[in-house]
Image (tube, rainbow, N blue to C red; front, side, top):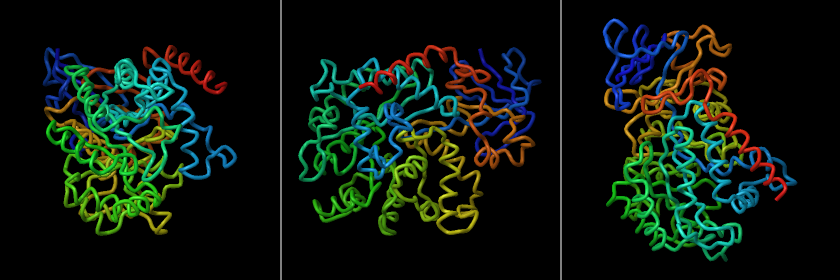
Length: 459
């Protein structure tokens, strides 16, 4: 049966509407807009006092890193730089069993839903057992993360990640034992994962050579070729830290972007994660390729990575998506506003992104938080246009942070003022998975996660 979701305000395809509802077919796809009087025989779900918007896209996530949130912030425990922070990450990576990973991922994904996120791109590089040996099923950990997503009802693109080495002329790192595969094993296991999830609702797969430091160029070319043949999204970390650029120049004589651009790895299906330390010429190459950049501002500020030059990127018309990355904070709307706010601190001006290429700032940032993320994951969605999946969230218009919100201010107040407390309902493929702030598995998920956390802290 078709449904009409009828809020007070509705944001569809970049436009705010009053007195209109979102008509969703039995398949969970958007049919279009309609009023109550036009929908005889359709189930109406009244969302009084609420505004409904396209679901937010989290294009870059490492769900297991939620396990040590808030426990690697001081210098004395390795929180001073990105490189020492990694040692804390290795501890969590080495700890989780398949069952633990399910419980941690499930709690992480539930938190995402509560933040209005309806799709997650899980950049997954935990493959082996803690000793570094492959499991009988080399995709067991990926499948546990997918099972966790299904348990809570979030859409997932599993970005199975290749990780072959610690870096150029570096010995294998013991903390990375669970990451390593050969190039041939990776491609075989990626193919196996695609077959294992074929036909599953809300699940897709992408290829993800971790970075040029972790994947030699010849293997990265093989993975990129495979992704093109299968029409998969291709994601990789690039230029998050200046040290990555230096190491790439030492090995290949080129920076990472120049290297991948010269070997056919940049395409419209490629997403470059971070991309902070690029030259003007490198950004021009990204723009010419049609690739997307996934910025992760809350993680990048947490790790001291640097400020993403979003103004330069906007002038070039490069699509930007967002990711929660390390899970230091799960809030895509915070990522959206920080893209602008970091520039304000840097330039000591306001409205840096406003009007670039004729685009108003709130619509630009909302586009990045929604449709650009869906695009990066190879999924048609993020604007609630006819034919797209009905993935959405609602906000309480009486929430203190947005009291007085109206049609004219809906986009701006959503981006710059909506907090987690305002988000009340979340729909994925036309079905409400969170209703008025509640999920049916709230208590079970919380209890299971706390048990894993207690064992991790004693580990």
